[in-house]
Length: 290
Image 1 (spheres, rainbow, N blue to C red):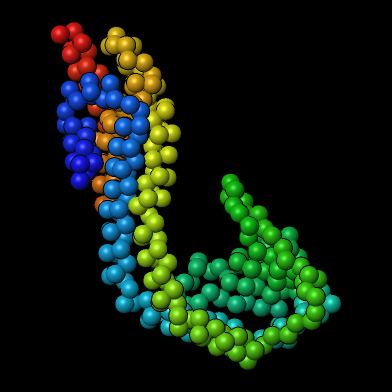
Image 2 (cartoon, helix red, strand yellow):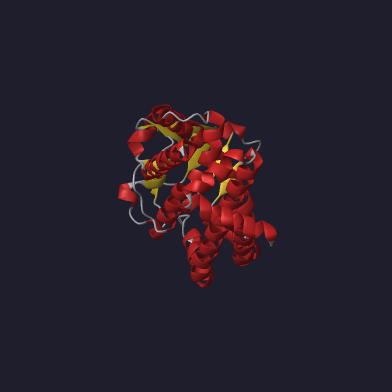
């Protein structure tokens, strides 16, 4: 309880009491480190509770979403389509190019196809088919990553199959049905992942948030150090960095509120920190002159 009181007093004074920063100058680095870490863990805990509340609102809809997804999965494979892979080559029983569209839940996808089968096509023509996956005689072609508007692709060669393969709608349907036990357990599996995620979010989220905050503070403190030279105080970079671990509280709180309310204000995080630290330096200079 004593530690919580210490944190709460430090939190309040870091926000509202410029004179408190004289005490921080004399405190150890680890005092400021533990303060900032606990603050970020607390905020991560608040975020975890918020996410848990959001999940509880959609939890009852998950079984219906899974049922809908299963129905879409069952009808995904066309009834007339038969595929055979033999000696590293793909063969079909349909006129080509043959198109398989995205399930209805995805909308029209701007005309993009899920799969195009064209055993006479070549991988280099992948962009012309406007598809996610292209099946040629020798390989499956699919997107890898996009850079500068250009999509690079990867290929899976049918020659990698060690034996012949045959699939039709009946076999596909049996494969989907065999997954029924797993599909029925999906709500509980999702619940487990969500609960574990919400539990580990505060400590691990706080640590990750701390590392990124300290990294950013390295550069922000340079600006404060320049301000220090202008105001002709003499704390030094290390002390200013430690002061910044408390001064950053305003920026963290404001950006946290903006995040949970889905709002964005460019550069406000840095501007609040610089403005507050400038005020702190001014107050510290006045106290030194008295």
